Image 1 (cartoon, rainbow, N blue to C red):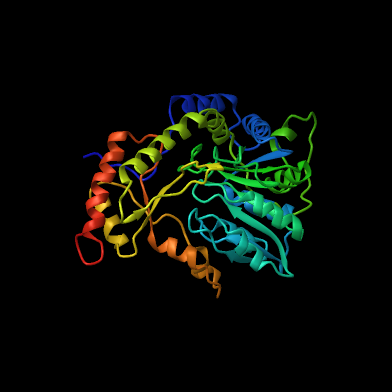
Image 2 (cartoon, rainbow, N blue to C red):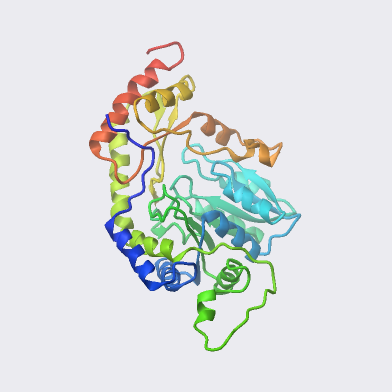
Length: 380
């Protein structure tokens, strides 16, 4: 049978046509016409003071912390159950990530865990919309406002998701997006910083281009402008090729998310009543972008064996995401028991907008017997 990949980007003829236009324009590099148009469209979409297109979400997180003035010795509370990009970004600026445990039902950062971790060196919080599900921003905003802390939304997985009617990416004063190949809107790689503060956006945009701003803009000036490097910047620009692809993808996001949502609904229908898995929960006040579909296995199921069996039959699978505090790079004595348990028991199964319902049914047809074969004590 044909393989069913875990992830697959929905890129086609419209995206190719947009790339051809960039080739014809003669400006494929960053911060050109397509990048500027993308930033304008993002600012409108999120009713933001500014949007900065960058090479990836990790770059957006780094630029956000620099613009917010985070310094060595500061502590930033980060969601634990996630790809550890937020903690890496905190380390980039010499500060210390402090890991907050998550809510078992959603895998999103637990506001009570955040409250318990606030100390004299705490300057802010990075919440994560876990694999596409927004965190509890009403509680987080009240908490950070009360303590005078910044709040950053890592919406890397959640483009198109909503919380109380507002779109992910507009749920905190600063938000960071990803357009990686597995996201709902993708240019292969890419990201954006979205903020209510136009000055913060300008700071991030300047730093994203080695601290000298747009070479494209300078090329339009009559004469010979010679920029000066007045501070250390970074090469975090998003190419105009990627920006052109994203302008098409963001125009399709409703369609693509609808298809992902249909896949999630079919999984839920087919796996209803399966006692060896717990299905993902979506609270009534939010919607899911379904970057990933993760089921939580019964403690007696051998997850590695189930994944091996799925892959042997051409079906993609993965562990889900990470309990960041357990990663050796951070060398922390902290414990986040809920995150650690989810990290040990979650299994990601194929989720993307190109899945057919026949493929979804085949995934479940293989998964069900594999669960029983590899449950504790043998077949159930």
